[in-house]
Length: 465
Ligand code: SAH
Ligand code: F3S
Image (tube, rainbow, N blue to C red; front, side, top):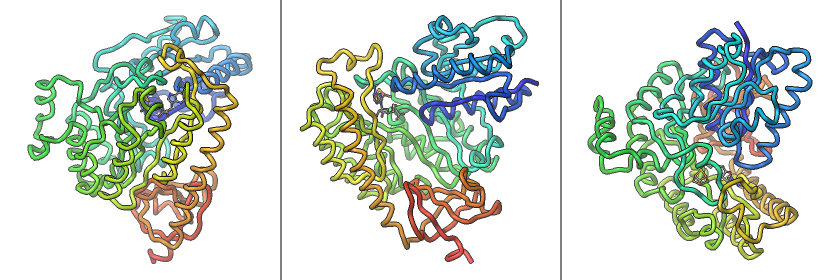
């Protein structure tokens, strides 16, 4: 049977989509190639969030088409995901070596289309149509694909986003918000746990909107199916009802989710951290800017003060909670004063980590045509200043772990050094230690001895004799 290699750009949602596509192909008898050079089919699962991510995937495809193709003229080349969705057939017009362009609502069709291309039934396929119920079609898992995925798994709970932040292309690439039903998601999680998974991360572009757009009556029926949702949680938001339902699964040890939106982070979600022991004390809450003026231009729907009060509530509900964020620097019209408000907010919050993005104009987004687009040099300079601050704060927070005992879930051998094993704390920090295969999948206590860049080094022997 043919072999396939999938390269993934971008976020965890994309990682999850690639895993589901790989699992479908494996189920049909395809093998997974170790590299693009030996594969019969190479798929690039793309990201459109910033121009840089698009350029990277396009350059990669050009290289594949140029060099690799000479030696493998029958190799099938395809684009999947966000850039495929937003650029469509233009990608084949630009580079006629591309055989397949598959949008974000069509991942579940990949195997069928690749069969047709390999059999020569069709020469080119572009499918970026919307498809009803596609949000529930990302469900296959590849638990044996790598040691790590068998301990910890991602589950896609919804697709799309209706928030329309003025800088963001995601509502265009992923479409309107559509949520799966709670029984459907719980069934997938149960299956994963029965196959050895101990930690589940619930995924969506804006998980705090889970179930909000669905028709009340339909939702009620599906929610009640099989008594999965406890009547005691009916007054809570649909997302918290989902957390409660997943929490009931025996054998599941840890629950995480990403990404919430600060606007939808209600008190019931804050309280869930105190109430649900399996919900790990870590939260990734995208901030984007510390200036109310910029937040308004971004159409974020909250203020600096609201964000700060959310962080405070979370820390009160769950002391020691790890809080990370996303920040954009150089948004159109951002002044030095606005940027300093972002710096001061970071000092105030003391994030455990922050992903910093230089603003990138995206086609057909309102921000791209706003006045006062900032020169690249300003974006670079602010990026560097913020990065220095974030790293300095993060390093201090990591150092504070030295000498402490933490619980980790062991994922498997470290990628860089197979003699070391890697696990994560409940607040989502990576810990490396001298372990062995018998530790994999275990929850264990380790004592932190030293720190590296965004890594803790632990010693299990101290406490696990
Ligand atoms: N809610 C989604 C957001 C997807 S985009 C999620 O968490 O997955 C991820 C991050 O990319 C955003 O939080 C934002 O900080 C950044 N981003 C989005 N559009 C951008 C743009 N046009 N330029 C720079 N960064 C951007
Ligand atoms: Fe994008 Fe804003 Fe939604 S960042 S994914 S439009 S919440």
